[in-house]
Length: 172
Ligand SMILES: CC(C)(COP(=O)(O)OP(=O)(O)OC[C@H]1O[C@@H](n2cnc3c(N)ncnc32)[C@H](O)[C@@H]1OP(=O)(O)O)[C@@H](O)C(=O)NCCC(=O)NCCS
Image (cartoon, rainbow, N blue to C red):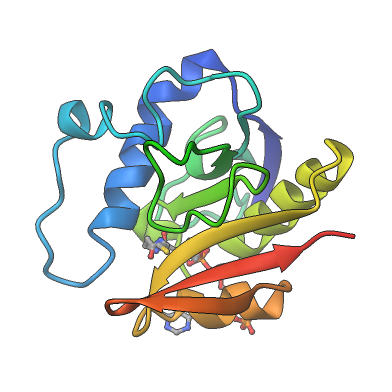
């Protein structure tokens, strides 16, 4: 399956909210919040605000051999990763300071474990470097396998808050 990555724009606000809902309900069996509730979250409300950057993964070319499991269509959205500068007044779970934007990432369930998340993260780190950021942060619960994915692209644990790690990736 051939996928493409493109910048997230204003029309992607709903999809980003859907991916935020996936991230919030990452634990198997956890209730998935409604997209309308999630759209008010600090991670997506008003998308895009100044300084926001994101990447959306889409199907460029469905597998010609046919993908029975996923029946991909050209342009189908597979996942998104984005960052937002948070404020000290309304910090995210992974807030470190106002100079370090915080990441959110989600991949639609049928496409997980197929390299989409790694490609999204890598592209987002490149975008942050191009924007001149020194670092990005995130929050991940200690038992989410995503912690190891984040470590593999350069994030390091900074602080434990409850059962979640705040992580930071230096970009210099
Ligand atoms: C976390 C998430 C974004 C990762 O994206 P993905 O496309 O599934 O991940 P990838 O296929 O790029 O895999 C990345 C690495 O994680 C590993 N991995 C993938 N799924 C895994 C699983 N279920 N259990 C353990 N490891 C797993 C892969 O083996 C890969 O490592 P490798 O490259 O060394 O082989 C995606 O699974 C997701 O949306 N999960 C639910 C929401 C969530 O947890 N968001 C993050 C909240 S902090």
